[in-house]
Image (tube, rainbow, N blue to C red; front, side, top):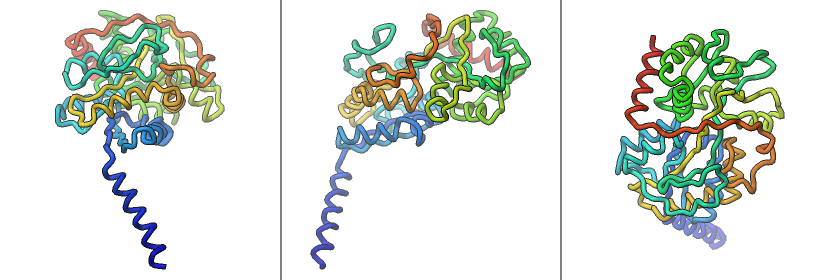
Length: 327
């Protein structure tokens, strides 16, 4: 009797000891990625089976908030991997010197342009778009300018100081309006319900009926088709074209597990991982072999060619936005 009880306990102690000795990979990311419906829970389980390690995802409200935390922590950050900024923040992040080269082959990724950055790797992408409910809004805007100028439309979007999605709108408005961007922001502010810190907060408010339109992605209607069997949510296709967000990940210079972090970045491109990311993050995959067929049913969105401005220009745009919305 005693022996049969001791043996299972000894096995448990051995298992706990092995777990305690396994390396830990800490990944900073944003909250919707780590939610129960997001990709992180499945990715964590899948990668731990491959690496024999312990993966810890640490969520923040949004990608910019996450990046600002790493920038504040500097070489003392606990993050081995930063996952969740995008191509509009990437160059600013690279200039900090807080990240190291990924050393991975990205030549076979399914992107319109070959990926050339040696520090950050893409793991999904999608066009920014405003979402509406077709049973509740009978006359949606056909252009970004119409959305900005129509005072009968209730709009929600994200703060460009804290949100990668909000930063995308900052660039989109400046791309379309040029030196008239301040006037555009002033017009939009008059019928903006709220400017939220992150995507989860703003999309949730939209679903509660607090606005007619919310800034999100052209892929967002797929979520409602997959999980609610609903065709009621539509992404507007603007005549001016759309900016494309490419979400990226990188290894921190402070990482104590750089080899493991590099293995994790490579894992993100495995077909099964891409299937999980594209489905649970509702974004287009960068390796499409395992993607849900519904991605092929999405409309064609004209992509605006965009070049990342210098940091000083971005600061100026942010100051102009803040001045316009505070009036």
